Image 1: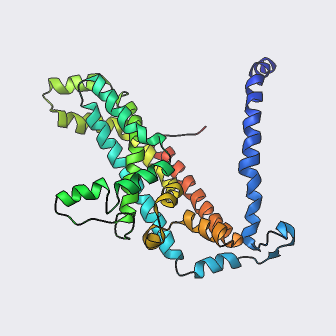
Image 2 (image 1 turned 90 degrees about the vertical axis):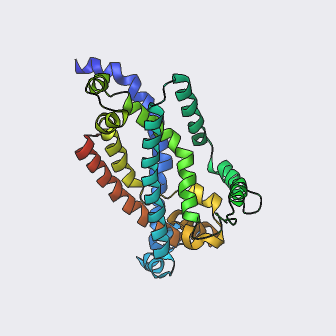
Image 3 (image 1 turned 180 degrees about the vertical axis):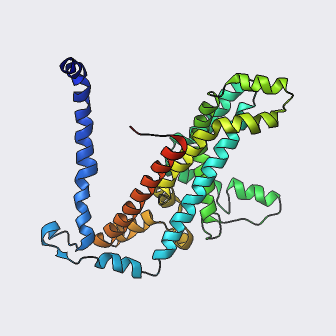
Length: 299
């Protein structure tokens, strides 16, 4: 019986092999480069002849005056993105759910979903034009209201919030679809019973819709904890400038600058390794919470 099952499933196992090979080559193979974090790495000497210096690269990073500010920027921006990325899609999905005509629903979903398909290279150019203090449409609108032009991408006070708002604009359409799918799982008889009891639309939302969405809200919230050190390299790299390094420099852009621009490969690898270790623990905790709170399992 077991032999027949194995033969029947053999083609499926063979189909997995190319994917496993790619994962081994592009994900696990490069992990050998972690050794650079413990070396004074010189490319001409390679892994084997470069001098081993233990934890010196980590001590050097911790001694830099900007390290803690960069760590704070990363966590601050990532947490704001997580919170806004939960609140906005939930609110929008509730509003779309209240729309009567299906055509309008589908049109709104499609419209808000479009930015998800655009890269940050394209969106970065669009945002630079829109937010320009001299000719940007946003500052022109503020000018009509009597407000002085704001340099959204050039002031430390505005740059983190610009990152959060633009990230929500790009991704909230995709998350909204997830919550709308969760709404379809709510039993319609609950609403019918509530209408018979005289419950208003607000009461129905408060006592039926939101509790019905709660499992998926808890699941996505706990899983998002694993991204607390991922503030978005692509977005920040395409939007920031030396003027906003103080508020906008994050771990990923820091690694890029010291690794590829300043050629301090060992130091950059040490920072990346630190981030990977912390992220591993955060992902482990988030999956444990997802299992305990929402009964979510990978296997």
